[in-house]
Length: 312
Ligand SMILES: Nc1ncnc2c1ncn2[C@@H]1O[C@H](COP(=O)(O)OP(=O)(O)OP(=O)(O)O)[C@@H](O)[C@H]1O
Ligand SMILES: O=P(O)(O)OC[C@@]1(O)O[C@H](CO)[C@@H](O)[C@@H]1O
Image 1: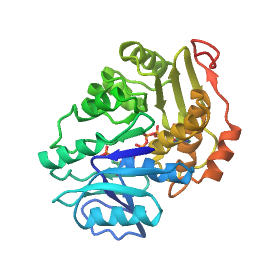
Image 2: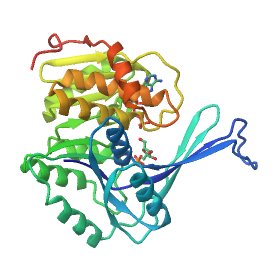
Image 3: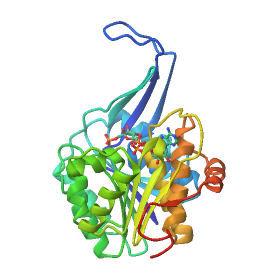
Image 4: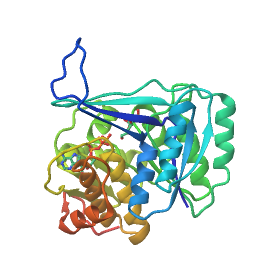
């Protein structure tokens, strides 16, 4: 079974205002609400790609109820832990550019955390765990690291998509897969990364230092760079018009996981990941399987260095 974990979910409130002015009353032309948070987005895309999964995490209040109901309407199983505070609301303001204001995280008590850890104790060897998004501020920065250590010791495959200190600490627990974007990778090394060559350099360094088996660096309109054993491969994204980039990275994670489960081939998985990320970036909601399969059939991969892309 695949489980996604969103410790800090959100209702994503997407507001379109074409002539937005700071300090004035602005009225939206269109607004939409979605159940959000990175793990929840991964759950939604996995489901669209045909992968049965269960969404875990903490939810509370009217916003939490909305998330649970919205997921259940899409036939996605949930097993959230209720908390006292309201789940946050994240504002995605679309003017001539995209501006995000992510809400403050709710309080997670020690008791909430204990209940969650007990739930994870039931994981089995054949399970896959996706840990995605920020940590609520009341949880320690090594929370993902602890979860990955414990799950990996049982043979559970852990996919991690987070940033900053939480990512840095989790690397020591050697998750099966990580998907930093190039800004997150740059932050780890306090460097600037803009080119594929720079991303390859720091991605290889990260692999050498921490031994994470599968690293996919997402690079927005430059596609993705996969770094595996003896493989450093760049996948150029398909052509298309950017409509909504929020959740493109989560679609990338879901794409990799879906194809890897099917083929056990990381290069195919990385290509499917880029196809899924781009298909979501090119639509106003998330990608559909038809779109992802179509883009996947058009993609190629180019070895940056370190083998022909098919070595293990
Ligand atoms: N402008 C674009 N054109 C084509 N593909 C894109 C574009 N932006 C994003 N993508 C696709 O989506 C994938 C993930 O994008 P990105 O690197 O921006 O992830 P991210 O920063 O984690 O995103 P987010 O946090 O918004 O979910 C890319 O690897 C690429 O395949
Ligand atoms: O604040 P975090 O947890 O880092 O990111 C949360 C978030 O911005 O990420 C998702 C897109 O990837 C959105 O659904 C959500 O609002």
